[in-house]
Length: 357
Ligand code: IPM
Ligand code: MG
Image (cartoon, rainbow, N blue to C red; front, top):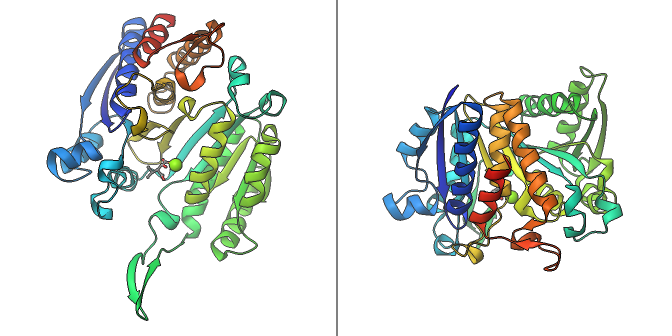
């Protein structure tokens, strides 16, 4: 089969990890007889430097005319003091909105060989296998009015938390359908003891839940969920939550598995889906061959599964990751013991994974 993939390497470690993911795609193409046509575009700081805006119209056009988008990461200290419309992060928010990607899936699964890489005790993280379903185009990230204004002689910052019933309903459907293919358990996370948006969230999610009698639904306050995630994360299957809570909880969930460098994500909802590692641009380790490419490679796995419906190919990527870790190959973020493990640079990790395929 033939596929068009828009690739946006972005900033920091983005280009390095994307390069390894492309290595894997090429290898898969040969092995399974597919043609993956890759077209690169500018996004984030790289685009700001080249053409003065974080998400150029050409990039958006490229994405819209592709079958899927692979993104590295955006952002860095160089652009941190830019005004909001000229921040690299704007590229990501613009892509999510323009492509209608309201559903962000962030799986966190423990690899047996990484049990000791977690900062938590192995008996706590042993059973981690969860999926955060994060609403991605609403809430505080996009609510209006927003801004910093002058009021009574001082500056006041304003953001708006707003969710319509239909926005809540469509993301709830994604969570319940995902749960049906997993352990049939949805934990909906909100702050309904305080926030009206959360009260509506709980009401709508409960009513959607009635359409999925095979799935067990329960509700949890976000502060409690944050605690439960480090107390006994094995209790979770699908965590359904709004945009900002999902941003925070998915970083926390990522850390359970040892390194945020392991976690892939898929953003779905529109015609063209976007795949990216959960980690950011990590400017402190950029261009040193220290980055872990596994999150980006696993994101390609999600692309094969969700956008291209290539289940065997996606399984092959997951098996290759397991195999390489089991042999003891580690990037710096995962290294536990120099004696029994081999420290690899970014590109060597990509080579070993390609070979394992
Ligand atoms: C993420 C990131 C983004 C977000 C930033 C880079 C805009 O933290 O994808 O989790 O906050 O959504
Ligand atoms: Mg985040």
